[in-house]
Figure 1 (cartoon, rainbow, N blue to C red):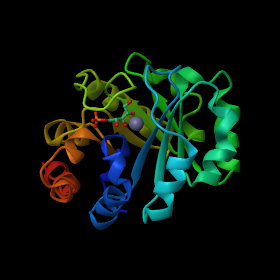
Figure 2 (figure 1 turned 45 degrees about the vertical axis):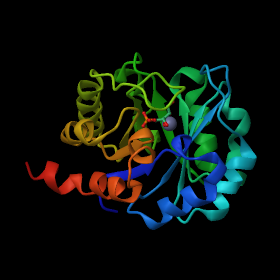
Figure 3 (figure 1 turned 120 degrees about the vertical axis):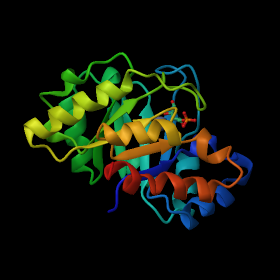
Amino acid sequence: MQYPIIAPSILSADFANLQRDVEMVNASKADWFHVDIMDGVFVPNISFGFPVVKAIKKHAKKPLDVHLMIIQPERYIKDFKEAGADVLSVHYEACTHLHRTICAIKESGMKAGVVLNPHTPVMLLKDIIMDIDMVCLMAVNPGFGGQKFIENIYSKCTELKQMISEKGSSCLIEIDGGVNEDTSVKLLRQGADILVAGNYVFSSKDPVATIASLKSLSAHTLNV
Ligand code: DX5
Ligand code: ZN
């Protein structure tokens, strides 16, 4: 796998032309599909549910990275596995028994991720970092696409990278929200591995080219 992993966020796709947009991502240099599930309770917005995830899976030729912005996500682990999730991420803030939930995700045969809201400190993951495959740092308050990047995420990313290397974990760092070419360059320097991009990709004139330019950033940034 060549880094960064690029995960276009389907939240910004044209839902009336979902198959077309899924096929665009298939044909691009993107690595994953980022799929946002919102319940209107954990976040002030509702996105879509299982029928839509299954419809994406039917046409997707790349893994589905499913981001659950829902309360009690442990109730739906098996359903998301059946709907086609390959990576399943839950919010730290939504899980009372995070370790149990992570174990259940992995036992279901998916990779397990934990997402931190912008205000949640990285240090809270110190006792679970060895058990998870990915940490996703929210760079916006979750709930909507197209919001402004919160600048303190750069230092959170550095801190997380340091924790991961000190512990000897193979956990990957994903950044979600406000990702564009400028923020990506800085994020990759701080150790980010996976870039989720919604608005930046889907509102661009040529989404395939935008994805390719994000994918090509690794060479530029890591050689600096
Ligand atoms: C926000 C979602 C994001 C969103 C990112 O709650 O989790 O995945 O699609 O959108 P952009 O890239 O437009 O900030
Ligand atoms: Zn997301």
